[in-house]
Amino acid sequence: MTSTPDAPREPDQPRAPGDAGVPERAPRVRMTGTQRRAQLIEIGRTLFAERGYEATSIEEIAQRAQVSKPVVYEHFGGKEGLYAVVVDREMSTLLSMITSSLTENRSRIRVERVALALLTYVEERSDGFRILVRDSPVAAAEGTYSSLLNDAVGQVGHILAGDFSRRDIDPANAQLYAQALVGMVSMTAQWWLDERSPSKEVVAAHIVNLCWNGLTNLEPDPRLGS
Image (cartoon, rainbow, N blue to C red; front, side, top):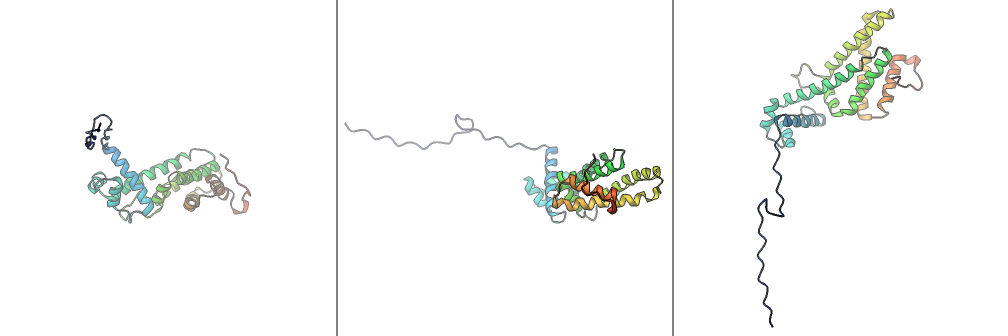
């Protein structure tokens, strides 16, 4: 008996979404305005840290966020507006860390905690610190690393003035010493940004060793007391 050849098979037809066996494509989730703003701030923060203000463009910010340039303008008015928001957030974070470190009554512990607070900020928010230590746009009169350091000098100077008065030292010199202390910590933090060795605790201990003991009374192996 001769067998009848099989009839040619029809090619499989694409199934519509929802048919059995075919997974549906998940709908694209749209960001809320708040979510989009947060995303743009984070992208701007990364780019400003990598390239600096001048080398960063609105086009690249929009491209990384997968939005059009008008979306960036809608949220921030332009690159300068986005930069100002990024810097303001970093400034607030760092100033809060420094201020909270000044609550201890003992002077040496205060110096230790200020040094450690700044180094911790450098460690945890390296991108933010890179942005702060760069030059800001010409139009930015405030909100720079220099202005933050001036705030820190004012707070440290006020604390030192009280300490000096209690020890019969002329409090008029407190601002001079505050400038020296804050400058020492700040410059060391900028160096440690790229070095990352030794640890922040060791770096802070050596800063305090110099601040507290002076060159003629350096401890051979300083340790933090807090």
